[in-house]
Structures are given as structure tokens and as C-alpha cells.
Image (tube, rainbow, N blue to C red; front, side, top):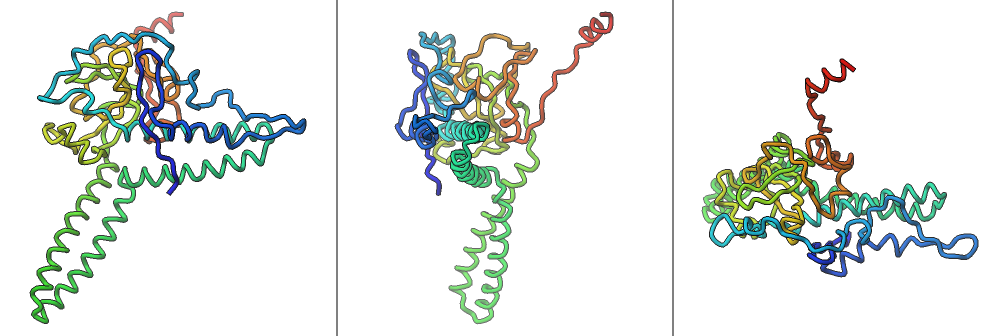
Length: 337
């Protein structure tokens, strides 16, 4: 397996964003260290992208400033013992970091080709192929693409076990028959779960879209949607800590990766929120929104105050481009002009 473990990124109220573990810094400086080359004049030249997605202070670190938490008191609501940090997700944050790393490598490959540095481009392309293979593997496991084949494999195993069960009954080996029945029951339950997960991804319907500004119903913070799953894909321990079992719709509802406004809570960064806990603002929210990932995942704000996702992000989640509805008054004014 490709060693691309990424540690969480946390926000500092005074100095912006930093990696909490050296492994993250090593991963995102990989291309910078590995792909420096010597030019014909013997001097070392570093392949630097004009629009690199590397994690440098100039790209994702917030400007050095005191972050004012405007609504910190709202983050202690909800069930007893539950606060907003319960929905904080390391895996969601790592998924975003992997996405950045993939984009960075893609950009560096193109830059090397533009400079006719073909050896460097090939090295980068090889690394990109490894990363893409790992990303696809993770997505298949997460999104149920592999669940179909898993369900099919279990169905074949069930058929074989039923044949063995029939033979055990015919030979009056009831102890073996009992054991086989238990195995069949377990496989049937697992097969049903795998099929349901694959079906959920095929028929996913989302109430919110990429780049949309939302508000948490329980904790009150403002956020922007940057990812989505049709069902909860977090671990059992995470779901237990977040009290997912107490939700009206449980874990079988869409869950969203959302970026939390650092002015409202500089420590949350990325949360994984069930659909029933989010609400869209009644009026267009055009207020300032700050987060270190915004400028990388989105082009900017549209006329309604929501963010416009970059093409790669839309492709990752197979989401169409969102078009703002035409205002009849604006169209009338345009015709008169």
C-alpha cells in the first residue's frame, strides 16, 4: 500500500494553520525535495508551479491575526456531553489533503512538460499514478463501488455453503449443519449491507450542493459544503462519539464534509455533518467567510454568496455545475438596455 498517511491539520488562533505531525509536512514537500534538477549551467533549479497547491504559508495559512470567535457560546448546545468537536473528522480532513496532493502533482507534471524537463515529468507522473491508484482504491471502499463485487462474492459463497448444508443434513451431521447455518446467516447479513451501500451511492439525493453556505442547526456555526456521502462513512467509534444513533434519520442519510468559518471557531476546521443537522440560510449569505482551504477548492463567490467549486472538485463527487436562476427584473433591465 502506498504510504500516504496524512495527519490532521489544526488551526491556531494566532498563526494560522499548521500540520500537527511531521509526516504531513513530509508528504506535501515530497515533490519539492525529490524533483529538483540540475540545469545545463550546473546550478540547481527547482520546479516551482505558479499556481501550486503546496502547503506553504503563502497558500493556505491564514494571515497572522487574532481570530475573534463570534459565536463560540453556540457550540455547546445539543445533547448532554456533545459539542461541535464531536463532528470533527480527521478522515474528512485527510481526504481533502489527499485531494490537494493529487492536484499539486498534476500541476507539477504539466509545469515540467512546459519546461521540457521530461525526466522530471516522468518521475512526477509515476508518483501521480501511485497516488491516483490509492485514491481510487479508497473511493471504491468508501463509496460502495467495490460493494457490488463484494456482495456477488458473498452470494457465491452462500450458494456453496447451502450445498454443503444439504449434504450435512443428508448425512445427518447436524453439528456441521448448525455451524453452516450460522455462517450462511452471517454472510447473508453482510451481503445485504454491501448491496444497500452500493445502491445508496447509485441513487444518492442531496439537499445541499458543493460550495453552498449552510448553518448548523444545533451548534449554530456557518460552514461551506466541500464534500458529500449518501450515508455515513465514518468509523463506528466516531459515530458513537457523535451520537449518530440518536439522530432521527440515523447513519443512513447524506453526510457532508463542511469547512467551518475560522472566525466562528478556529479549531474545528473540517466537520462531518448529517444532512438533518444542516440548514440553508433564508437569505443569501454574502458575509465574509474565512477558511484556509477556500481559495484552493473554490474559484470565488457567486452572486448569491455561495462558493463556486473548481472543476476537479465537481468531478470528484460527480456533481453538475450550478447555475444561478435568472432574475426576471435583471433580464428585463438588460432587454431595455
